[in-house]
Length: 311
Image (cartoon, rainbow, N blue to C red; front, side, top):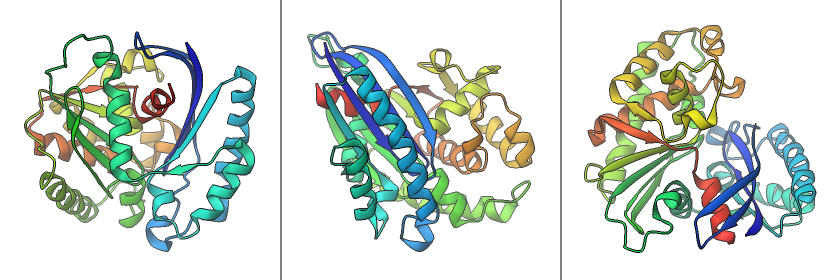
């Protein structure tokens, strides 16, 4: 077993995983898995810069994570940053702050690298230990705050694409602060999503997969709502099935609800209340475009992929 720590810093949240991993067996034993909403991508789509207050929220979370990593005695640490920091003019300020706090160089990865890490994290428990190449073809979708990644493959990645549709980006771009949203806002968001899916379809086959796997907070929140959970339960959500009719019903419910009504949903994280409508519209559009009747929901994602890359 190797004890390692992975940090995934996205547009909406920053997450930590400290775990013991055995690459020979595929066993991953979580020691500390946590998430903090920091909204690093606040205003990036409009200004092209990371806001000072967003940087400070992120650095505060990094200080907490540094203490946890030290307490667990992780041998290796990798910090990966995605969409918001890719787009920001002042990302050097972000990189310097993380380096000072954690003592590691944050890697601002490309959308394609992000997609490959998401794929390996989501499928590792299926692939590892199989003596034969896995024949099942996956389409993994990772709905983030600033971007959404699409990756297909079986035992290895075959194609990948990252596009700039994410729940935070679309919420800010279209001012989704209505209570509830208007028909015009919803139509504008759908137009952006459909355009992005056209781009994805140029290089990623969206209708050929045997199994569609959905990752990240939007998907897991939708799954928690579909399951009717009284509180967020990672174990219950992981590997659950989310049907198209459920996604359509929940999306319609969310976009018609007020902010207070969305906040009252038991599994809803407070930092996701204002961006869940855009996220749900992305998932719904993807299912319609792929023809998927259901998706497998995974709590194992890019964070797990980052950790596996260390061991």
